[in-house]
Amino acid sequence: MLERIRASIPALPPAEQRVAKLLMSDPRSFASLPVAELAERAHVSKPTVVRFCRSIGYDGLADFKRKLAGSVNEGVPYVHRSVDDDDKAGDIVVKVVDNAVAALLRWRNAAAGQSVERAVAALAEAGRRAGQGSRIEFYGVGNSGIVAQDAQHKFFRLGVNAAAVSDGHMQIMSATMLKPGDCAVIISNSGRSRDLLDVADIARKKGATVIAITASGSPLARVAQQASAGHVLLAADHPEDADRYSPMVSRLLHLLIIDILTTGVALRLGSSQLRPMLQEIKRNLRLRRYAEAGRDEPAEAGSSESSASTP
Image (cartoon, rainbow, N blue to C red; front, top):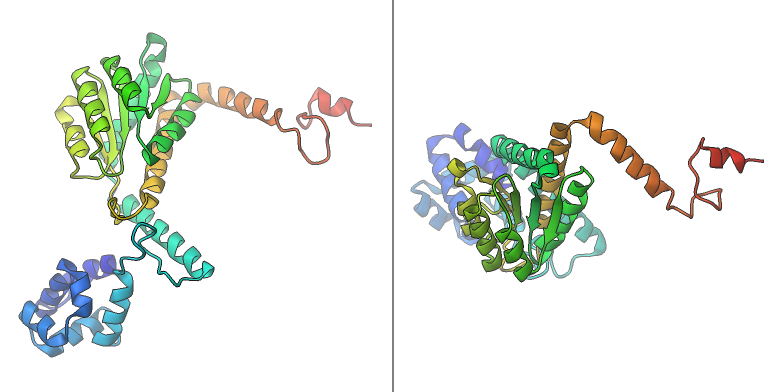
């Protein structure tokens, strides 16, 4: 709702733009203040406040404030920002999914393509130099540590030296062994973890490329914004308050960014070489499935084993 209003501001008359700016500065207060005080704060008349609500598609001030209150609701603290205590299962499904989809689309529209390109280039170069000992290390703690493990799982299939490190002491040792040409991918929701900031500082001093997946404006983001040193910030901004809610949307954003990096690096490394290896991995994994429908033994369709077992 707020994003839609922000996009409509340039088309509004000047007086209504002042009302819109007041709204964007403090949506929660706007939803609760009487029309007289809203008009006074925006330096407009009371009818202008009502006209603003109608200009952006609502029946009037009461209708607008009711829907605004639902949009800026803080949810259930420490549980989820988009749900209410009395929500039924169907409501939870809709609210959680809508909240996640909105965050993903917002990130897509705000994503810095140049930063993604620089990150993919650095990771692909480290992948090409795997035979010379170049490494890609993924660092994260807590929920971000799980994302780091997912990243390692995806990248090692590309034939690169990739590892995920979530223990603080191991992270320090790992970062200390980095060298120029290596990549340190540091994943953090808040960007304020002391352990990860130490890792970023050590990796930077060792000449490795620091790629930070974190909130813009955070201490970790500031380390990665040193573009002159080749470091990269992949900002993963979202409305989830890290101090009040367990990471949900942020984790999805981090996983999405890892998928984008994996895809970009795979294309850079060349599908002609990777595809046969990935195909063989899939084939060997299929052979581990013992519960395939219609057969007792694992065998590929069309293989000699499959044809031999056919009566």
